[in-house]
Amino acid sequence: MPDQELPDNKQWFESVYTNANGSTDHIPWADLQPNPYMMKWLEREQLPASGQSAVVIGCGLGDDAEELARRGFIVTAFDFSDTAINWCKRRFPSSAVRYEVADLLHLPPEWRFDFVLEIHTVHALPVPIRRQVVEAVAGLVAPGGTLLAIGRLVESAALQTQRPWPLTRNELHYFVEAGLAETRAETFHDDEIAALGQVRFQMTYRRPT
View 1: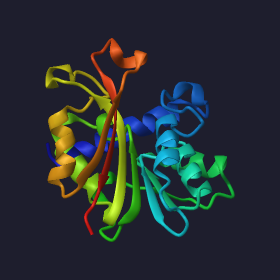
View 2: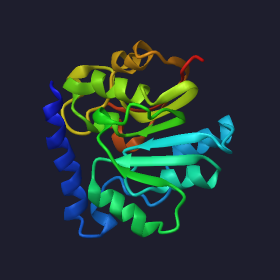
View 3: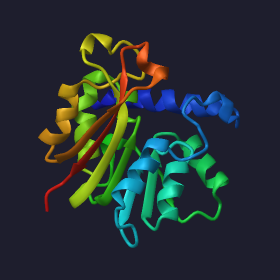
């Protein structure tokens, strides 16, 4: 599937935020707190943060980005949606986070980060462009850097029937094919998605130096 698919996806995300009319009740993924899986992972891994660069892909309303900044990372956070980014800036007017409107598949070539956070963005984009999306995510990881990816996993591509389209194990391997080393693979049962035949995945990757 060619890149021209992406403007439709951009419009889909933008419409979610604009139709919300400033109410987070109408944004399914707006928990207004950092992702709990990310929080547990950060506590366990104890990554050095001070002076280290980090990027949040598909940052939504900014809670994950703000948490990373609070821990000492120099954070860039981006999203397809202009409305989402403006919302972040209003929520956190004194933030140290650099919030940007950006397209994952057309990022500045110099963007490389010590820590890359991807939560629920890959599975929100269509399956036919999945390898391209994964390669774009992996490309943000600097030599020696770390990627934490969190999303939904299914055993069969036959279950990828609607947005969000969960990943298969074969698709997770795209991160390795893109030059990253898998350092930890975890899955979690979640009652919310179990009826759909899905589990949560939490993958840790590192780019060799």
